[in-house]
Length: 68
Image (cartoon, rainbow, N blue to C red; front, side, top):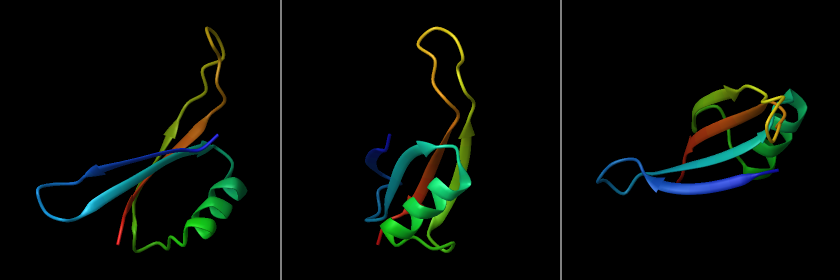
């Protein structure tokens, strides 16, 4: 599952991209490679814990990055 949302970082022309992906390192690395993202463009990676009950979801990573 990959979700993409774009929103302005400020009033400048800079844009922050975002995606949410399964919390497995190899999946994260594959997605970063597929999007052409390197360490200089990544703002942060949040770990979103799993929710085992009530519409349970596995753990996920939320990645914020600078768009060109």
